[in-house]
Structures are given as structure tokens and as C-alpha cells.
Image 1 (cartoon, one colour):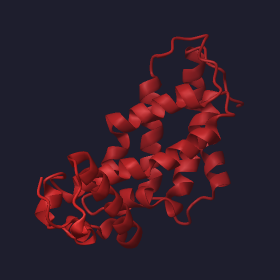
Image 2: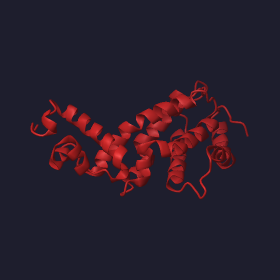
Image 3: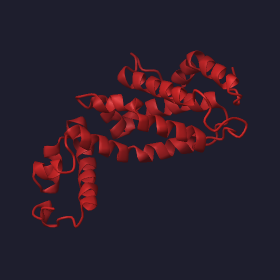
Length: 209
């Protein structure tokens, strides 16, 4: 590892270097949003761009790593919000509503929209995102999964569908954008019946019609 730069305090390990790069990226994103580049992060750290490139091959890779770290607090809060939900339809709808409503207040959700290559926005439906959504339903809600297979058929597709709905509203919230209550009603009208049908076929607790 090169030892010069780093504002006179070089990291002792590669893991520490990555941690400090991510921390600097958080600061840059808070200030610059999607305009953040490796050059900005390098300047913030007092290192060359080549040093940052040793750990992250592109700006998109760096922003994705920072976004994964930066959204953990949001996901933790969302999990807490869903703890009281005991039916699958209400949990799915509330998860979509809370995520869409959080965009103005969550810099990394906003980054999904603003990042020029749109690579991060497409990652909303990645395997990692689907796994997070699935674990949130299984572990963070009060749904009784004991009566069915812990991996019910179609659950992964249901999570993907919910993520695609989030992706759609992030891309185009409408004009004017719906309020959270309006969005809940909209999703109960159009998404609710499909989830209820799947829930019934999987012997899961049904949401109110």
C-alpha cells in the first residue's frame, strides 16, 4: 500500500483504506449528490485519483458501495415500521409507500434517480435488493410464516414486483405526485388484489379487501 497522501495519516490496512474512502464519499454525496466523482473523493482524502481507483474501478462502483452502506439506516427504520404488520398485502404496500416517500430525505435513494448512468437505479431490482426485501418480509414483519413453507413459491417474484413498483414511482412520481395516503389507496386498489390472490394460494394471512 502506498503510504503518502491521506492528509498525512495513511491507513494501516486495505480495509481501513476502503472504510475511509466510503466515509469521504458520504461527505461528498451530502454536498454534491449524484455529481460526486472519484476526483472529488480523492481531493477530500488528500490522495490521487489513482489511489481511489486501486479500490474502486469506477465512480459507479464507488457510489454503489457507498449507497449500500448509506441505505442501511433507512432499511433498519423500514424494518421497524413493518414490525406491526401481520398480513402480506399491507406489508408490501407500506414498504412501497415508505420507500417512495423517503426519497427527498434519503440522499442515497435520491442518488438512485440522479446518478447519470442510471446503473444504480437499475440495481433496485438486483439479486441483492430482492434478497433484502425477502428477508425483510420474513424477519421484520409479524406475518405468521409457520403455517406455510418458509420459502413460499412466488415470494421472490412478489418482492421483485414490489421493487419494480418502487422503481417506477422513483423514476416518474406523477404530476402532481401522490401523497403517501393517496399512494396507499392507489396501491390497495390495483396492487392489493394481486397480492391477495397470491396470498390465498399460499395460505398466508389475507389483507382486508
